[in-house]
Every structure is written in structure tokens, then in C-alpha cells.
Length: 395
Image (cartoon, rainbow, N blue to C red):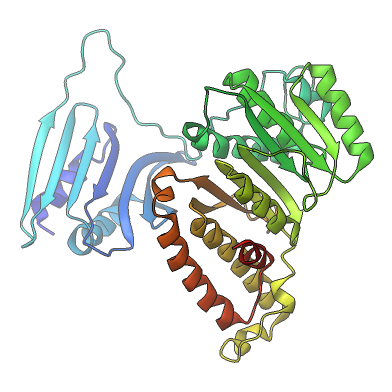
């Protein structure tokens, strides 16, 4: 890399440095962009580089000399643009297709009486949660997550994070939910209903949606307790019922279906119900995916499937990937997302399906293409997933 560029960057990696964004990768590059910011760690200034690769972000802390060496690699072999922001200037670096580099400086004028911008030196930035600590929320107090002052109970902090993470997934899909009418939401296998109460509180109390929420579970004592709590909080449109996912017939139209840790094929029945209702949104955290484990048979994969633990994890991932693809075939935009950190539980996958209006006009063709691909994969693995069979039987 041109020494003048490296010199310009080096001279401005000082107390005035705020951040840098390195972007414009070549076509097909796994590395999408890099963000660099200063961090204070054990009294020393380091530079945290966040590499965006596909849907993952990798963080590494560098000393100044190490960062300059890494920047040389990024700009020579990967990226064609860098924007470096300091308190009083912005430095733009552009690299042409022929490798010629140009550097442009732009002064930043801070208006009178405005707050001067500065770098955030926190190594681990405090997470901005939807439900905040210090704000007493009745259902979180009764469920043992908060005390009466709104302080999170230490042993329940992971649960508090999980609830907020779930609400973030809902926040993302708000544009898909109508405000013009009452929405029906069903939570299959609601259990103690931490997330059901949180969902109702967020959508009804904080966002003002017209909603009716039904929690369904097989445990009578749990359902009775949840109904008592709903009445206590005045949640008039939140009801809990004893019922089974596969046989539930209590609604003809549902707008959002939630299924959290429904065991094995119970998830498939919940997804099938959601598809039949043409639910706008599906949020599913599967659990105990045993079905394909007992079915899978493939000579090519036998070297890896002979290990029980590997086979279990492989078939669990295959199960959820096929579920997501089947939702795509039915006109949904599917995503497989990390629900909570792997360190807390390996059951950390959330399947989110949002009904895509743009796909409805070409559903027949999309369905044909997707189902053909799924059928080929199914035959390769010698499996017959429950959701696949339920959908085939209806076609």
C-alpha cells in the first residue's frame, strides 16, 4: 500500500480518532466490511476491528502497529474504500481497479453550542434493552425476574436477556402487523409464559396494537396460574387454555403464531397450523428434533453419521433447515436466527417466517421449484419430515 496512505492513517490514530469503516469488497468476497474503533482495555488504548463476514461479525483487538499491518492487508487484497472519522476531520481513501490510491481530507466544523463528538471507548458497550432495568414491570416481578424496585434478580438475568431478545425479533416484524384491526396471536406450548406476557405487554401496552393473545399448553396447573396472573394485571385479551397443538381448532384466522421449545414434531404441527391460517408471522424455537435422527440413512455421509453426537446435531440442523425451506415454499420469507447465546443452551435456533406479499403472485412457481429442491434433499438423506408430509397430504 502507498506509504503516504499508511502515514495519513497512522498520524490520525490519536486521541481525536473516532472510527473507521473499510468497505467496497470485490465481488464474491466473504468479507463485507470492517469497522474499527478505539477501546480502553486495562488502561491501554487498543483498536477493536469488527469484520463482517456473511451474517457473522468477528471482533479482534489490535495494538496500533498490528492494526496498521492488518489495514495494509485489507486495503491491498480486499477493500477499495476507507472512511476515517476524527473529531475535526474526515479522511477518505479510494483505491481504483488498477490499484491507484487517492486520499482526500475534509474538515469537520462543529457548530457553536453543539456537543463535540468523541469516541466511545467502552470495550463491551451496554446493551440497550426494550424492557429496562429499574422500571418495575408487574409480570416480571411475579415471575421472579425482577424485584419490586425493578432490579433484575441475579439468577434470572439470562431470562431477562432472553425476553428482550425475543422482543427484538418481534420489533423487526412490526411492519408486517396491521394496525387497522384486532390481531389474533397464538402461543403454542406457552409453559410458564414469560414470553407470552412479555409479548402482550410489548404489543398492547408499549406499542398500542389491538391484539388477542391465546396461550396453549397441556399443563392444567400452569394454565390456571397464568390465567390468574392475566386477570391480576388487567390483561383482558390474554387468555390461557389447556390444549394440544395438533388438535387445536379454536380459531379460523390467526395473524401470528409463536411456538417456543415445542418438542420434536409438535413444532411441525404448529408450523402446519400457521401455514393453514396464512399467519403473517411465525416465530418458532424448535426443541428435541429426534425425528430425522431415527430415519436418516446415507452411505456417503456414513463416515460422519457413525458418531452419535455428530449425527444428533447434524439431523437437528437438517430438520430446522428443511422446515425453513418448506416455509419458503409456502410463500414466507424465512430466516434462521440465534435466539440466545450458545453458552446458555444448544437449543438456540429461532425460525422466523414472514409472509411475503410479493411472493403470493408467484407462489405456484416458487412452490414448485422449492419443493423439487426439498424433495431431492429428502431423498438424499432418506428422510420424511413431518411438516413435509403434512403439506404433501394437503396438496
